[in-house]
Length: 244
Image (cartoon, rainbow, N blue to C red; front, side):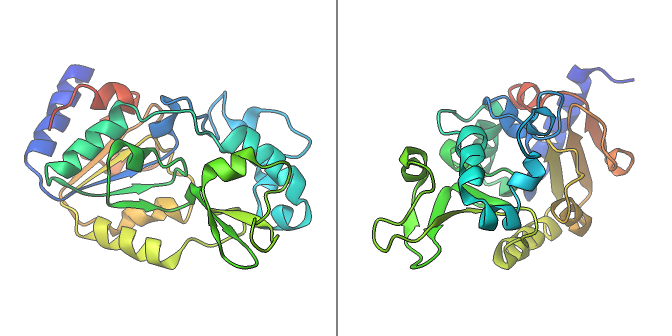
């Protein structure tokens, strides 16, 4: 059984010898920035609300109970007072060095872009984009946070909806195509901070045809056996010890 030091050294060697790296990440990438994940012991799914979180963040619930949706959304999902961590920063540096071609993320917090990453495919949208459902006007996250009750357009009065993928909604086709293209042309795919149980997002890694599949996650996943390297540790701990 190799030590964590040996595993990190092996990951460093993989990074050093590949130039078309893609990173596929989930909630675990942002938990170290203070954003709760959904399925851990302290995650959103294990907290008590009048409705289950899965129900509240569904398309049909948003339509029929918009006020209750926004009470939960503003309190638990619209988190703006956080900063990128070591994982976000390392990936941004790796892209600047020309070795990482894309980040594919299931997160909606925008921390990859805040850290400096440019080519980011946000599978589930972003809290930083919000649009009036009537006229299409754009609003940033601060406008939503500062609004009372249901945020309304200051031009036409229409209801504003976050550009996040709710349950019962499909993923954006352009984002999907970009993510599939990036993954299918990568020579190394690093998967981090995700349990790989959310589909169709998790299914995208089936498009990988490269020679090095790396998994960095605290808990085991269904893909561990097919990976070249599995590191069972927090992604921030691992990435803080790597260099470009």
